[in-house]
Image: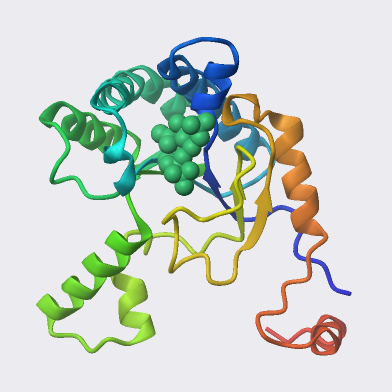
Length: 243
Ligand code: IPE
Ligand code: IPE
Ligand code: MG
């Protein structure tokens, strides 16, 4: 069997379990979300030190608007505050921040924070951190189709790919979901066509370097066949194409 290259270039994460982390401690759910920001900072640093090139995280889904108004406004506020607080350190660490999702129904404060964070970090290249906020995989496909219609382009796989919100990065190699659920919840529907999946029982605030390394180790033991047979991959590894 031929194994995937050891460290995935692009890791995507459904950061799930903040609410349960807080409830287990009889704390308000928002405390779990705050801990979730700490966990993301730690995870981004760990990805950088392991040579991961792109980290894409799911922070707020199109469907999360359906939560109680108090939680939604708490999350919006936390997001705006975290943006202001985290950007200097991320910038110093060479992280380029990109925000992916529908901006139209976000507050002016949040949109300004997003734009400032993107422009402040635009020149960085050590790690691309895509934060999917007010994002849904279905939204992404629909906005890409609308873009093609506007441009008068035919609906080919390549054109659609170029119109998707994550066109600036290759597809994720590894998709991790924390929190014990085994579903995609409208995350990267188009882009995860050939991703490897890893489901972790850790609640997101508890997802540390060791848990990340478990996911990377599992990934390194997968055989990514992309529709081919195992024998074909072995033959290919033994006779790499001359460049
Ligand atoms: C994920 O944690 C963060 C967001 C969806 C914003 P949850 O808030 O879904 O946590 P659980 O699943 O209720 O524990
Ligand atoms: C997915 O988690 C969205 C984010 C992590 C931002 P949810 O907690 O919203 O997913 P469901 O509702 O359990 O499927
Ligand atoms: Mg959840």
